[in-house]
Image (cartoon, rainbow, N blue to C red; front, side, top):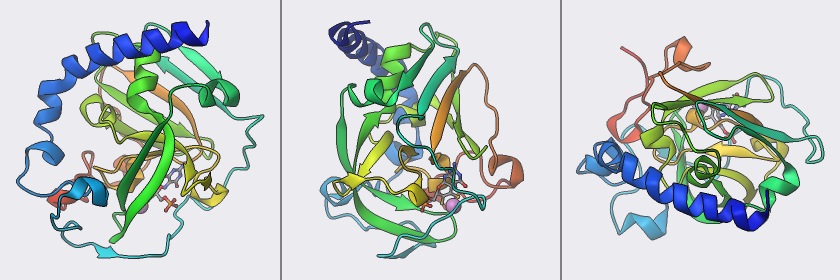
Length: 231
Ligand SMILES: Nc1nc2c(c(=O)[nH]1)N[C@H]1C(S)=C(S)[C@@H](COP(=O)(O)O)O[C@H]1N2
Ligand SMILES: [Mo]
């Protein structure tokens, strides 16, 4: 497929997706609660900065399963499949040729640290969804890392504009320990919802818990509601 065809498909499908998920998205805590959204200083409008129970850190701790896969960009592939009209596998060059999004956002780890104003560059999940076109009955995604990690998201969270597959942090390639060459970020949810070393996004017609969701962490993971563990 030509790049221009891809772009047309993305732009058109993105509008339809926005319309389809608008109402559900409005009902999510980051949009409906009378509390700030913590989406980086430019978006914060002077509101308080961090959710309850969090402490700001300027360091950037590393959390993983005890193993950091070494995926060079020539070997990296991103598979997007499941309940979509156009399943695909992207190479690094194909991925980098897609529309690029820059955003500044906050990062809240459930282990109580928050890192603020992180400047990312990557491809938005909304644009990737536009490319593959989720089927009408798709409701969730399950993300897979090269380290066997998995985590799930509802589409009304996953399609928010600040959810990125990020490859660049503060103008430098994302370091391996933080999920480089490419990871997902979910600024409106606890950071375990963003798979490092991402290799596959599966669209689902039902919800399916991932690694931490199966081990007692909250399925929804709303930092602004202190929503850490499943009850
Ligand atoms: N593939 C993969 N992604 C992952 C994890 C992991 O172990 N493997 N840990 C999650 C958790 S619990 C958090 S808090 C963040 C940590 O990202 P960082 O190491 O860049 O701070 O990544 C999330 N994504
Ligand atoms: Mo975490």
